[in-house]
Image (cartoon, rainbow, N blue to C red; front, side):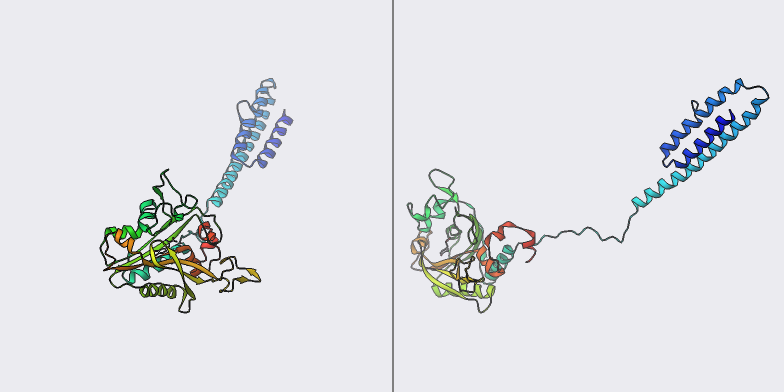
Length: 347
Ligand code: DAH
């Protein structure tokens, strides 16, 4: 029996020394000291001993129990301290670690250029107006002297909503000319930026949705000279005093005479070539078409109740993406719509 007790003692102490969690310690307590534990099992055999042996064994058994109890308490304290230490280490707060950076958004490069253009025209007395993208064909075409059957109204270029082709996504901001003249008497001096839509394939300079800025000035004695001055002032303020631009005669139904204005390609500097290859930004033209313009057609004025004998006016409609491309030296229109932050962060 003495040997049995000694065996239990050694095993219990060894197991307790190994134990590294409160759960394991509790298991060991039950195993050795519990009511159904090993020590109790041995003590139950005491009855079979002689009366002389009994107190001697009793002492030994008590000593073993005491030793195990003391060891258990000792280990409990050590394990709890270790658990606490681990917890504190895990939950410790290092106030010197740099915080998570907050990603700040910023204005899209195209909007930056739009703001520059608006600011220039506002400083010259223009009022900014906006109008619907879902537009009546009457405003988008008919009242701009573009009668039914005109090729510009073709279904292959225009997104129509109705079978009778009376409602559409505006293909240009020019209907804002009609809306402005309907709403006010001359002098009229407005700038109307907004989205326009055409059934175009996307490439380096085309997109089915893009932005235009329409300008309209109506007063007495307005001439083509005023138009050119307004546009040259804009180009110089955006692209510098030595900006290279050209006016070409053109035809638009709602202006007479009409012209287009081009800017020298910022990528090939007018040569049409880059490293012996056709320039992909201007398709080898050396120039990028920026806008259409002209003197408002007398029929358009009359249709809005403005006397063409007394008043004249000029109008222009420019492509905002292309203005931004030149301003920011962007070579492909699609970058403007991709919204890749690596691209946007450069501006
Ligand atoms: N709306 C024309 C277009 O989208 C551009 C244009 C031409 C606008 C002449 C005008 C203008 O105001 O007078 O191609």
